[in-house]
Length: 246
Length: 246
Image 1 (tube, each protein chain N blue to C red):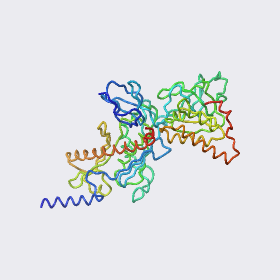
Image 2: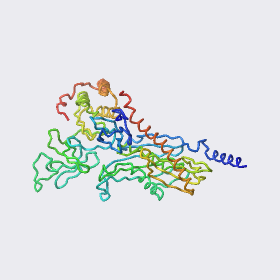
Image 3: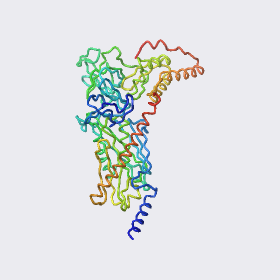
Image 4: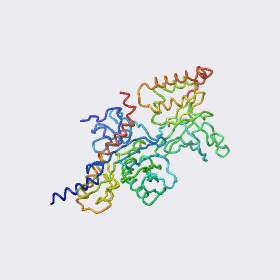
């Protein structure tokens, strides 16, 4: 009776029936109607025990507590900063979210973060209409220099790879410093920024295929060999920069 | 005598359906998802000589603020016909007609969307008709519904739409420009095939109630065909890379 109408990892569309059974529960991006569970949006079926959920393939970033995101400070208010994190709503850093001690009557908040600063922050609270960020995390920082790239937030897990294998490989090969935000923004600094861009575009394009890490690696090797022949050739350049991880 | 009359009428109908379509046959249908790169979701729908493109942005914070709804997302639709879409130039900008169609399109799509998941935000749908030969509102709804799914917006079902009418004694599906002039009525409907709910029903012309029922039935059958094509288009876009995996 309780048989999956869609296989696990199969692509489902809004309104697709996944199972007709009361033995299962609808998880993320699913809903129950009558005896059946349907998909709410375009994604891939995932079954965990008796919970059926759909992993989205597209869409705007949905903040989750604990996520590291990249954002731009767009406004300063009396008690904190407003940050654009490329999601549905703007995020907010309350004074409790910064490392410094702040006395609002004496400190100018723009001395800490001013409008236009790009930061790497952790999401401390996320409800449907408010998102709070915190800088009280070892990884949180303000970026100086570098470049920001954008990709679909649904594909960020592929850019990172299993145990960060993909991102570490790209860092190693290109010698760039990279920070990846779960919201789909990527900060890059180094000599080979165009190459990182190419890799990111390739991952976004071929996001659901197997052996992607190997293929990206091959592409990078080929490109590096090509550019080395044309230029002075310093393949191991900027390796020490990898020490600082994103 | 009677038989002769009928055959002449049939001949008339055959003349009207100059592309040799059967009464309950759609025009050649093309649906493509993901045609606009910068939009969160997009689609192109072409039915014979009618072509519509839809782009979806959001959900994003509603602006101006007073329009925000604290319990749900608002849906904004902008329908327009490009100046070169018909034989006579269409004046660009909003018109009485385009505002009305924007409104009925919104009302046709809203029941399918889980608006309560995105408070204080808005989902914007832009529909442009680039070639018009009757049935532009239904083509627009078809495109918008695919674009919404492509944008990863949670929905109960896809919405399919098509118009039907009555020429002679035949109930005809998907009227084209020339047929619209001779039909007894022009009845566009939008329909959610999974839940079997009608979200749009308009009618021009006069017809006895029992015939109206038949026209609606004809249109619903057409919607079901379109619905399958919509799903196929979305699968094609998103399964492309997925298949390589297996």
